[in-house]
Length: 201
Image 1 (tube, rainbow, N blue to C red):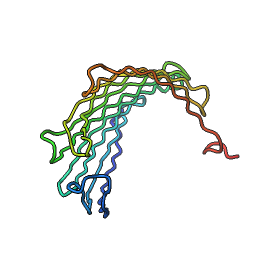
Image 2: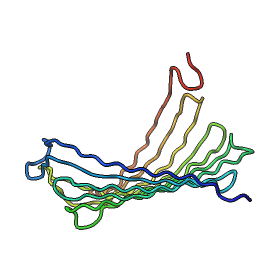
Image 3: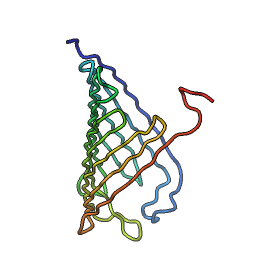
């Protein structure tokens, strides 16, 4: 088996925004918002059928006179057999994020993990779990307690053609500020018309 082939990328950015927010109480308003962010990514071909991609990101800056920082990591694993790549495939993903804010007693955290499997040429199915801390606000816009939301969902997708997609999703979410979980059935129709890269007209 050949050794891993890797590709790497790194980027960084700094910005400063001046303005006076009007939707927040005067005590929390700030005229200057500045920050920096960076991200890196590495992709490795494990075999001819599989690869893995790992990314990291970090952002920090001053908002309302105090430092606010984010850090995250994401991992993607892909499997696509050369012999049956038209009919089979698997993509798994994980992403985690942490937020350090001066107005919170603890870090706010969140993550999701998902797996999407190709059943046939036009059929796909998937599952996903996620959890996230949510910062609530009172009627005046001030920071309230932090609650945690947790969810799980399953999807079934059909591609009638390369220009359209039909997807159904069954989702169950337990919101941190509600007593009972919420169950939803979602339907999505997505289509594209007009010129595209392969066919101009």
